[in-house]
Amino acid sequence: MNYEFPLVIFTVLTQFAVGLALFAAFKSLSCAGSTAKECEDISAWRSKDWFAAFLLAAFGLGASMFHLAQPLRAMEALGNLSVSWLSREGLIFGLFTVLALVNALRESRCLAVLAALCGLAGIVAQGMTYAPAAMPAVSNGVPMLIFMLTALALGSSAGQVNGSHDFSTAFRVSSASLVAVLLIVPCLWTSGGTVMQASAALWMQSWMFWAGLGLTTLAFIVSLRAGAEAAMPCLLLVLGGVALTRIIVFGGVVHTAVNLGMPY
Amino acid sequence: MSKRYAFLLDMDKCIGCRGCAMACKNFNQLDPGMVWRQVYPLAESIYPHRERAFLSLSCNHCDDPACLRACPVAAYEKRDDGIVVHHQDKCIGCTNCVRSCPYGAPRFNKEEKHAEKCSMCVERIEAGLLPACVQGCVTGALQLIDLNEFEETNAVQYPAGYPVMKRLNPSTRFILPKMPRQVRG
Image (cartoon, rainbow over all chains, first blue to last red; front, side, top):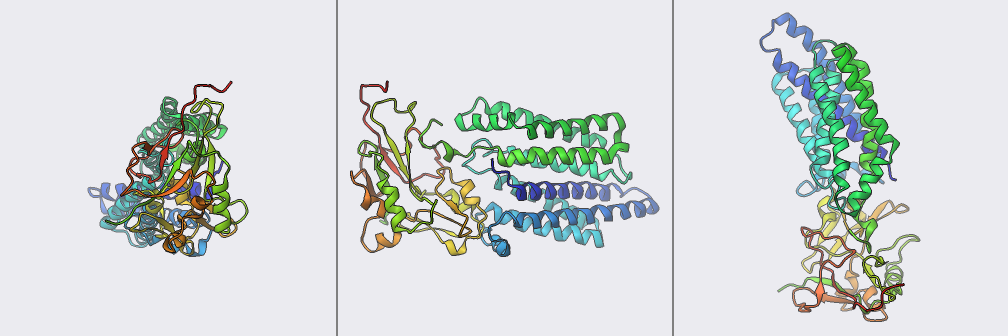
């Protein structure tokens, strides 16, 4: 199994950053009716959220370069924007990283919304990039759905760590949905073709898959019991869970070429 | 009308000698461990006979190549004659083409740090010669055809053991092996 660790780190961190940006933009917009003092306090926290989003996205982009055989030529990956989703993904996340930094230094509502929309576009590009025709199990909307739920689960848990907002409902809905999707998808593959069945078997037989689901479920239970007060434990649990399941999302999907000459 | 070059594999004639794969490796001076053409025996569940049947596959030079769409550095080029060429000097080794091609045509060369694949021996074709694999086929099972003038009604695009990818529209055509009455015992 090829674990693709640079891609695991890249996708998890950039989705974490997008989640943080989404909830920071939400905080920015929801501040509209509050008093000036309240807005000032929340703004200081938001600035830290944006800075964290910038660091996560920058570190994720850095990690993605280790996936390349020739990392020093990484900038050339922006050279086929007209057809390649990988090029578009690189450009959009580059732009998102810059916008996150600008928001951290001098936030405005307009820029916050722009950064959040850019992050969402990045998730769409990522969903398209990692849904190749050669992997029928994930050549569909499944990667995009998993990536979106990951961003929401990580963003909602991290967005409430400073105590300024309570996103525990959003966290519980997104983490429970993520667990449900990760459980349902391989079950559906078992009624598909030979290659999809092989992918389902790899997922179901992996301890990392079950450990990842276990950690995410535990984060859901902790949040249910303690709410926003347990934001940090929830964040650490869901981050560990997402990282483990992501290793299987990349390493446990069977390529059609492995079955050439055999039934499909 | 422009040409659309393609491989035709007569599976009834193919004896699985791997001469095509050797000729490809020799002509293109491939590194140890690298193959651009590979011969796959058909599984018994597909062809349950004493005689064996084989799929000799390299790049299928698709009409809408997944590798070309996946490549972030535009290292792939679809020529007017249908041949999909990979420019190795442009490749940065992201392996997105390797992940994207359902037929496993692009292979990653760890030593050279780039992907590579069959170019249908485009330089030989331009010199009026046949691709090395076609030239090297001892039974005449592997042929070069122009799909725009190809009228063989027996040929199929998707034999068993070969993924159906209608959007990509692979150009390789196959003549299926005969079905002998004696089942493998």
